[in-house]
Image (tube, rainbow, N blue to C red; front, side, top):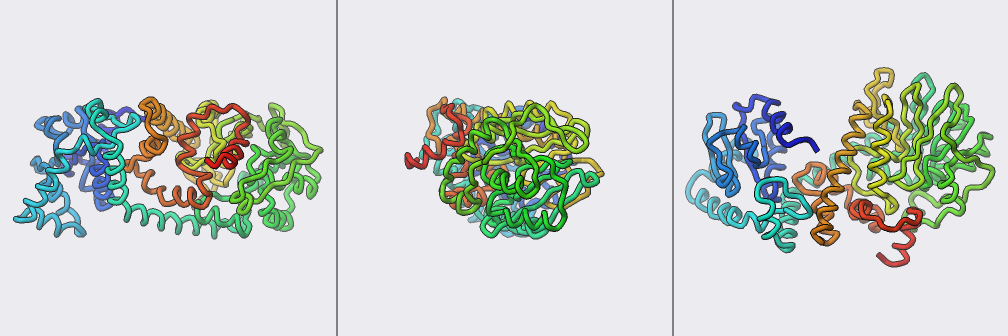
Length: 505
């Protein structure tokens, strides 16, 4: 993650800091983080700047602030230079917004002021007991003190309280996200997107049960055709949709490639080959996983469909593969699964990433993910000169003007910046998880430290992530994200879920 001092300077320089209320809060405390999350939601006019307590922050904001005092209670520096402390700071902030104005006014008067100070004082005195500082989560003053005094019971109480304080925000984020996903799905239903003068075509696939995935979770299903090469032709339950696309306009397909052996990518390999006469190309490891294809857990089989075994003839991928007008480099990128490859056009600077990149934030992976390998693969990919990044599930990251806007699909972002964000996130996770297991914490506690409510993505994605956990019977979950950093079994990873299912884990 970025240096804290640089982030602090950026915050203070991003607006006229002296015209704002500067809020100094304990970045370790779930209750403080929850209240700050509400404050940021209410503060549509940017009246406040929220800063976790550090020595640098206190120096930059006001020389009168003392570390000992700030660690005891919330401190707010007003635009007039006044310092409000504890409950008085809370009441001061509440008066800034119409929806909380009455609380602020009453909170400054007897007897509500006295009651507020009493309750706030209790929380302040138990700060270190309630602080969420597990698995290396502390990054502010006195982490040793917090680690020594914080107990798991207090941790879970604080973490749970932080969740319930944010619950309305979690529910609203879930509803908003679901509405956006439904909108994107309706715009892409039965659609084909032709780009780069027809060199790149994205066929959006659907199916009765597979449609639940993009609607609920935002993961679109696609087949990508690049310069005559069809990549990842979908699952059997999307076959009718793929056939519909081929009947509408028959694209020239000279080769069929699978980036990896997951069911939504390989279920139509032989069918498409028979329909077009194009040969199939897969990596040697993918061919092993597809002959025979392992029996899927029933949830995945029901929704996506059980692919048939790969039948010969097929060819093994080499370092490059010829297209109609150029060639694609084949680059091994294990991590999402052991057999994953990406395809790169060095001339057009296009990366067909498959599932090697699934957005900068992705929290519910398959049980066969190895995030340590994924880190190495993304570092290798980052060395490429990429101007257009095409995800296996249809999203496109680019700043190029020859790629037209398509809301919900085309993301105006430098692909290398997106990959760098993903790397930063994975490195932070690795640090959290390693520290947690070094402290011999339970897996569920380590998982919680990887999703602190102070991070907006943690509570914004909470409803979706837990829905995925529920509907997949725990097969895709935040817990799997933690496990992906501590895998010790070096057998082929796509068989891991079989062991778990049979063992009842």
